[in-house]
Length: 235
Image (cartoon, rainbow, N blue to C red):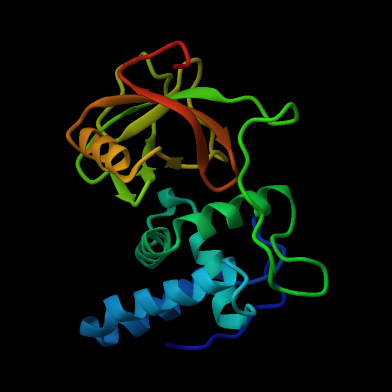
């Protein structure tokens, strides 16, 4: 795997450390294209390193910091390396990924004086201080959803109108307005069982409509409740 230089003059709108994600993605992609047979292994190795950093098992270096920034890219940017790396990370360590994203929403995910979170913060259920959740409706499409264990991941396209105005396959929208440019295009749902996650992914990939009640966690929507169909009341 290649190592890269940090661009100290670059700025990031998501992470506190400064890395040129576009340059990093290009360099990684070139490396993968040189050896196509090795690409899948390289992505898996990168995901393993990234998972270890998220879980606090290793110290982040220049290379893993760039992996973290790639994962932080919006899915609508259509970066093939970022998408492949994100999917592999969610596959390998869904709990560490969710915990890392939750910590990052609140503050720098790494403690002062270190780039490692020694004890990953546990995700909690709703508390009096929790932000409100809102209904996000999605129309399924082939390849839109995937699952790993009990974790359901939905990558979607934004509709330019509200949900009741004929969503196209693969699109999601709020019930009362369209998504804005700064909102995520990914939904992460910790389902009660692996079977429930698989079944929901299968129904969405078959084209079914689903309504998720979500909280914006920064780079993805975290699900608090969901149901099949055009629900208007939280189940």
